[in-house]
Image 1 (tube, one colour):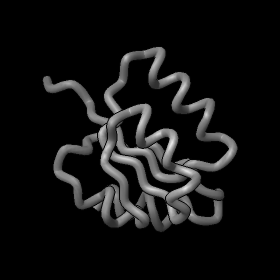
Image 2 (cartoon, one colour; image 1 turned 90 degrees about the vertical axis):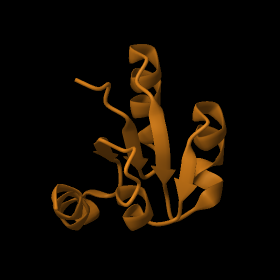
Image 3 (cartoon, one colour; image 1 turned 45 degrees about the vertical axis):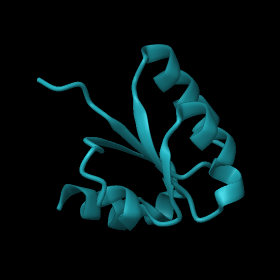
Image 4 (cartoon, one colour; image 1 turned 120 degrees about the horizontal axis):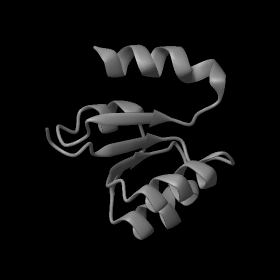
Length: 85
């Protein structure tokens, strides 16, 4: 089984905890999406990840096999539904 490759959607306040845990676990973060490039910049650089301003761009990345949704909870359903499709 291939190693999971992570995509992170949302780089707000909770993101620092998720990024920290994933880095400690050695999880490869390959793509990050956020509407605000400034919020994602440090994470993108630290992970050497690709960046998109839309979750659709991240979901279209064939390398991403696991998605971590860190947006406001009101947006979880449409994003998770799109990821599952």
